[in-house]
Image (cartoon, rainbow, N blue to C red):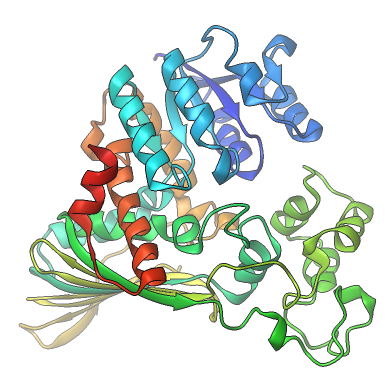
Length: 429
């Protein structure tokens, strides 16, 4: 079996996740280099994978300023920093595993796609939900004609109120100027999944949404800047940062993200609560991304789709599919073997379709319901020609679906309906 050599550019949560999984597959992968400015993250990769000092760097410029020494580059930097290293790595001859979103603008997405075509490189984008047992089975159900012709889909990305507060209010993706707008960061997954399930092109769409709740005017009377400064609703507020980050010792995701450390101490966490936005009142941060949004789409075969992104729930994705033979409720949050509930028009009966889903949940802490592992497996199969481009979330398919996301945000901001073909042609031709 051919072993693929890998470098990782950006060794935060996502870079660590993919390379940790690769370490479990030594016959397929060997991580040989890293570029990461934060010392403890860079050292973690170096020590775990036995990387040589000469291949460990603080910046992407340094690792890509030497001749190509691996097969695959993982680009898992922050969203705004995908474009330049992706373009340079492709020029050097690397194939890519590129974290989503591809880039923060449609222009940059289109340029990365064109660069991959120019140099004949393989690029897989990390739409990890495609590789979950749940969505693969849902795709099989649709393709098997169980529900008949799909007429409409209602799909909900229930972000979860605490996830929203962590990632999209206090955290890295709360401000669109620092990162990207909400739909691109969180729901390019979902738009990609919906197009993949339907298997047709979207022809037009519109979108509505706003930031309504996590704003200054909704701060409780007397609430200070930081939760630990004597908030009057300290004991009852669900967003109390001390309870979420300091008191909960088991939530490694929150603790490592807030401190930017692989193994933070309580002292590290407390320092983060005193000095960063992770300790601020959720109503007093600099967030500007929406906390609820809908996207309405019509596809080439007249299938209609309503996709909802909403923060005000416990979290999880669920989908309602209405077809000519029946309707299907698919709930990714369920882990009891009853993810797919079907109403059959012919028999007028409800039944649960056979389910062998072994991994529940779709969050980062659950490994995206098995998708993180699944995409690493699929990456190897794509790189060794077992899978073809149409079988995976390759750059052309992903960029086309990214254009739907950019078009939806354009619609939301300008209050217009968008012709999606013209939008794609503008940036990808």
